[in-house]
Image (cartoon, rainbow, N blue to C red):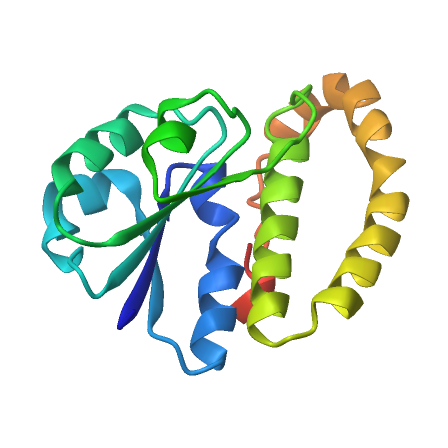
Length: 178
């Protein structure tokens, strides 16, 4: 394909940001576009020279399902990342990738993390480093698995954080942005 567009809403979109930067570092033309922006303003970019990767935890996001209908017949290769195998997204795309994350207990910790991991594996496949990436992700998952129950247990303390008067900025760049 001439270009890769990755699209989703909220955490699904943000999980893709580092991936699109990593594809660009390999010389591919890739961008992340919020699904509603792609649906209403930028859909003309989707054609037979496009690989479109749509990301939706449920696979039923309104913007994603409407976008699937709107771009049907344009010749784009459409890949869907979803956590639900029976979802509209997983059923109608050219290639479905099932994230297979456990249900989220606190915001989108598990699904977000699993989506970032899937994107890391796809990037590694482009570089022919899949085995090394798999080993790195396995080690990372063992460490982070202990953090999820702690986050769920401490979520009641999150209200204190949200009531802070001074802003808190979290910054990243390139593949570390997501």
